[in-house]
Amino acid sequence: MKILVIQQKMIGDVLVSSIICNNLHTAYPDAQIDYLVYASTTPVLEGNSSIDNIILFEEKHRNSKKELLKLGLQIRSEKYDLLIDAYSKLESWILVFLSNAKRKISYKKPGRNFLYTDNVPFEPFPKTNLGLAIERRLSLLEPLHLKIKTDPIPKLFVSEKENQQALSLLEKHNVRKDKKTIMISLLGSEKLKTYPLEFMSKVVDYVADNADVNILFNYFPKQIEDAKTVYNGCKASTQEKIYFDLLGGDLRSFIALMNQCDAIIGNDGGAINMAKALEKPSFIIFSPWIEKKIWATFEDEIHHLSVHLKDYRADLFEQKSEKMLKKEALSLYEEFKPEFFKDKIESFLEKNIR
Image (cartoon, rainbow, N blue to C red):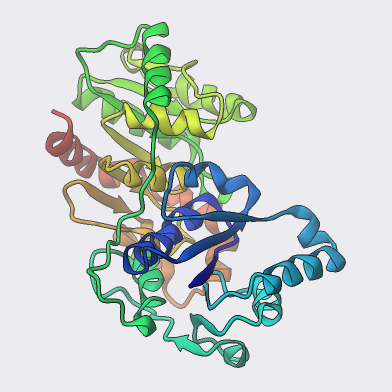
């Protein structure tokens, strides 16, 4: 059997959708399982033996109809028996249409059901603490009636060499081995997903005040000015615990560094999803326009918990669409005071660090 799974989009989406590949491999160990993803997301798939081939969706496919057609014909030539489209947007619809796969599974959405042989309900609310991001992916396997117990947890694989390099980097920066280490997901993928910097300084202060830990900042070199703003806004006693210049050189080195940490706290995004895949406790601060029910995965109020402005100021969300909330995100962020969830951070640290 030849299977293609499609998940264009960002790192978190690709990592979460890899559970489809993992479970298919368990159910059909002799099948060829290929995964179509954006080229920039492949580092989170390294070492995953459930995936036989990674097919890259590149900028040229987005910018050129000719290149997109060539990719579709390449997929068609593979003669897939099964195609699972976890993305279900225009880019993937074209590829699905061209694929000629015998069986095609995706979400049931108006106007596109004719593309697929199986259309799965796109559930609006989670049924468990797995969160909608996980539950929706697993629902795409239901038409197959797999004779296995599905595993909902995404996996990241870190080599011994990568672990040793991370340990050497920690040693180079004189990170104290007698203390636990917390990664701060300092900045979101965009400003509308980034907790206000002056508020984040207070969050880092809460961490330092309540746990004697090493603190690492996760940011890209191009974001250094924002990172400095957070650092400079912290108390002197907090700054003493921060290893500001300790950064991985690329995404794989970040994963290896995260593997040496004991927990992650901060903005929702790829870093949080990678930490969860490494089985690290997480505390997430959601942007006001992001739906918590989708990405608050594995929430148990102990090892994984999150906060959202709606938890404290539901009145600000009445009769507002996602589009309206996104437009007002920055002003809503200003209402999301860190004092609202100070006690939750303290509880998280008590249960996972101290």
